[in-house]
Length: 92
Image 1 (cartoon, helix red, strand yellow):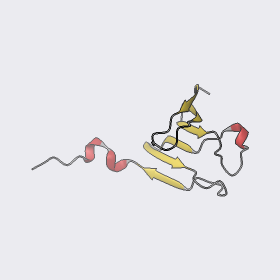
Image 2: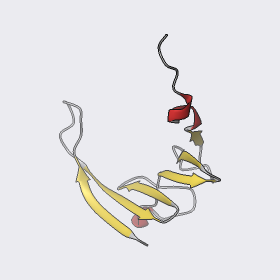
Image 3: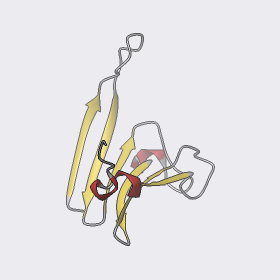
Image 4: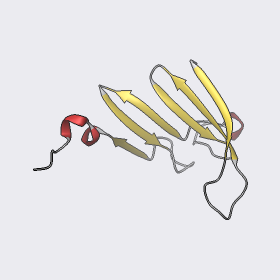
């Protein structure tokens, strides 16, 4: 592991005042975010497994997330190819 940071993330809403513990792991191949009380299909909640991942795969940045603890793999994968600067349309 290259870098691990744990902190308490504050709630951005007005009704809920309590934050939650969050872990961010930075590796050579991606950034992984886990949160206390959340997990994935195969990992114990005590381990605070990642539920969000940003990775570089085959030259493309992708966002993966696991929003269903009962699903084995990521439930959503998004690419960012349309966000590349080369795709910017100039005003005419």
